[in-house]
Length: 556
Image 1 (cartoon, rainbow, N blue to C red):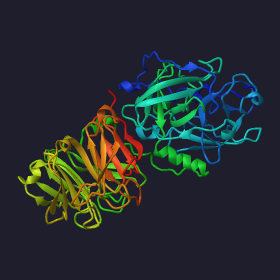
Image 2 (image 1 turned 180 degrees about the vertical axis):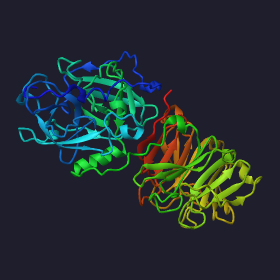
Image 3 (image 1 turned 135 degrees about the vertical axis):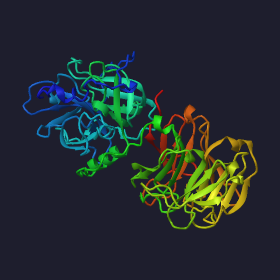
Image 4 (image 1 turned 30 degrees about the vertical axis):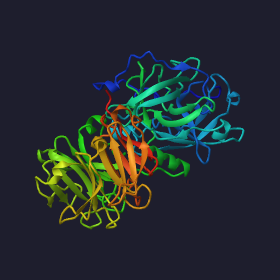
């Protein structure tokens, strides 16, 4: 663009996209792919950046896209882009190579303020820090006094990815060294998880330096030429293993940290310096999870009813027991060991959180494979599980229990009741469970072959009328909800998800809690056979809530 100064070549190339040395993970390696990005004329909402101090050339760097906002003046790109604070930058949507500023289709928009997470370090390869490689830019109106969103006819919607495996449209501007005509390229590609990182990965050739910040657009509408930006090209190593063979690219998905940064940009706030978001591991790790239970175990601030908080206790295949503390904002603050690997905890049949002793905090109720039922009243971060109280001895009828879930079926005003699915498909509710025993049994359903196929159960408050709504997960992915379950009858059935909609991985473990402060227990956490873990926040009796991918599945 006439009237532009060249940006130093290394601003959007090495070291950010330098070749990874000593990396054995297949997900980091460049791919030999037949899929190539296709040069085209671009779309109005995607453009590139220039510096116009001392204008002299047509060199540009990085890619950005317009996102819808109240001020209609925000652009999203990668955090490692446009880092020279003393330099004035400009965004040019649907840039036309060689044309003067006044000849560009929608004009030129000077960058007024840049918003990036204070903990981000450009080019990082660490799990938490590289996941912060996103920036929002507030831009000034163009020479025609138009805000950028108005000028281009509408922005893209910022959205969380529904899954780490899907399809996206990626649009970017490779730098002049590999793109002498300055045209953008487009690739319609499949996404997979980047192993070991909460990031997206695609295989498509042609994405050389300059494409950092490219939007990964889901549900691209060819009529409006916009869609949902679910990530931006960047992340580990600046967004790819090597600029010499750019067949693999990575993206930071639009998750909680991205939305907080977006909110800062909307309200013109300086982002607070906080620790990078905690990452609870990958699908390879979570395939080893054997039990999970939610509750207020560490004062995370999620939920006020015992058993419905934002913390989770997990039992692993080797018998280790760990506590994932909720951060009070829908995420996780960290993991702490409660029990080291051991033989005893490998024999857990099922477990659940609940307020069984009336303390207002969560206790952990455990059903063992030999029929013993135990209550652990003091579950706290960093402390071993002590104070076990036996509610039923080994050899009891509880050896035939398959799944349990704590809830409130209207008898005590707290989560002191228990839903039980038995091995023969019978369904029971136990009321008045506490330190003195397992309470009173009520038969909800006689033995039923279809209930023998249940993989996981939970009890939550999905209609705002109390924690008495039963949700059931099956191996084929089906999710059913029984609203208004009481001690004498199973509630009305609603299908939240039909069989097969979860793909081949189905439902493995499930728990219900409140991931947000003061909320009710309407957030559903599900792990799958492939190790993926997803929170469905704000689930109702008729629909799954907003999907938030916490752990991407294992890559095979």
